[in-house]
Amino acid sequence: MDINDIAAKAAAKIDAARDAKVNAVKRAAASGVEVQEAAQLLAAAEQKYAKDYQAALRADWTESDLRGFGLDAPAKKAGGRPRGRKALQEPAPVAGGSEW
Image (cartoon, rainbow, N blue to C red; front, side, top):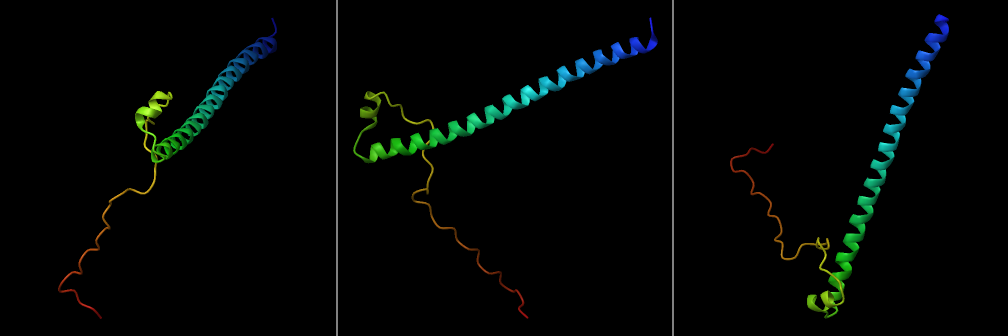
């Protein structure tokens, strides 16, 4: 056997193993991106559903009515401005401070 042939076969085997490992990481990374994109789409769809569900309630449908139509209450509430929140108070000036 020729030493160069043995070295070439060994290098080919190492290259093939490396390529398989790199391709496995590429596939995993691509799947991870798909999962992140799907999670973002799901979050947006859940937010829209929550807003639409609230709009149905404001249109004088009850939760019981909506359940009767096969609509479950959203898992998360629709975002928006909180109701009844008090304004933040500014701290009082410190006494004894010097002004130039």
